[in-house]
Image (cartoon, rainbow, N blue to C red; front, side, top):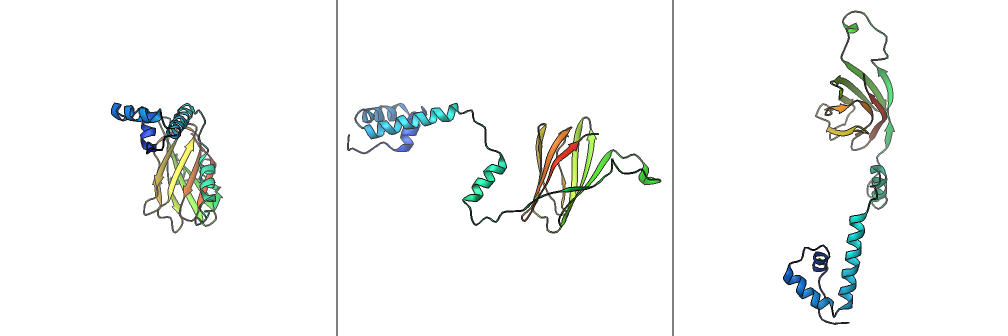
Length: 194
């Protein structure tokens, strides 16, 4: 083994990824011919880069990643997750008389989760659903509303009145999650349809 200075890991990585200039490559190749340690490191880097480029695995689900990270972060206090309960659905409500009985293009849903309520308005326009609402809870500052499903995903922040409006989504079944500093509220199955 040659005892001269070894090639830096950064230079070996540039060589393995074909980013090194011809001058750097020529100088390194001369050293690699005499230094088994640098040659072995380059070989390992090339195998690693090949494995990374040919990897077809899928990312772990977000909840699994968060749990794994929290294992190594003892200072992070776990936030309780609460499944919201549907308390009111205007589509299932009995018809009233007077002004309230007029047909509305929006559907109202009211969910409850411990000390928080979530008022949702779902409007269908051109086969797309617009979901807007308000969190009835104090505090709610800095809250994030996320909706995801097979047809798409979207996210919105709560404003100073704890209101939000999500971008239009295709009709379908979604999962809605509201994340605040001290609580996470989830609606696992939210059907967005007429």
